Image (tube, rainbow, N blue to C red; front, side):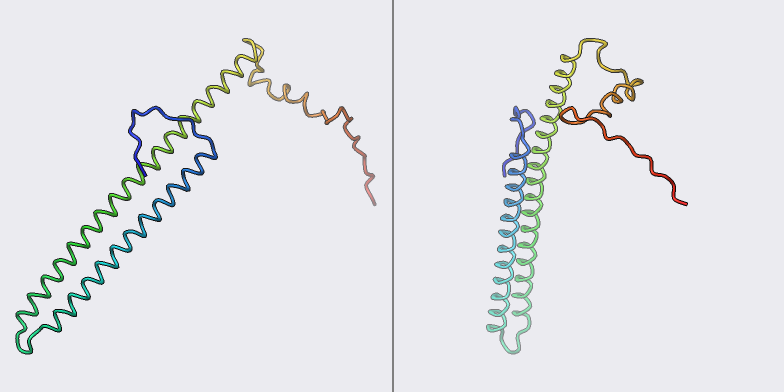
Amino acid sequence: MKDIPQNVPLASVSMLSMGTRLMQLGLDEFQSALGLQIKCIDRDRVAVQRACHALLEARAYDPAAFLQTWQTLVRDYFAASAALCEQSQDLATRSQAAFGALLREAALDFEKACTQVQARAQAAYPAGAVPQAADWMTYLGQFVGGRPDGEAMPQSRSVPASA
């Protein structure tokens, strides 16, 4: 994932390319999450190996040496955990920036498409030819009776009320 700076000109985003890029962002996020899980497993494995080594080397009646080794082990474990937490926050920030850039591109492309459609609609109707909002029912009423291929509307049959 790479972040897109704010001042970079944006390429148009089609629905297909947006879907593809969203899938790519999701796969990148998944791959990064798996990488963090591997680092967590390695951190735990190293901590267990060091704890076993400390227990094997501990003298029978010297708890001070064991406690010193244990404190070092716990301090290193917490330092590794803090580093992994920072890496996960950095990953989340980068993925949010990439997702935000994609949404920004899509919104700008949508805005551009809407202005193009509006410009074409205004060019198609000369001034005053566009139906007014107050007359929208009468304007649309002429299309209600239309059928494909010039077929006539079926006549409604009156059904006598049964007694």
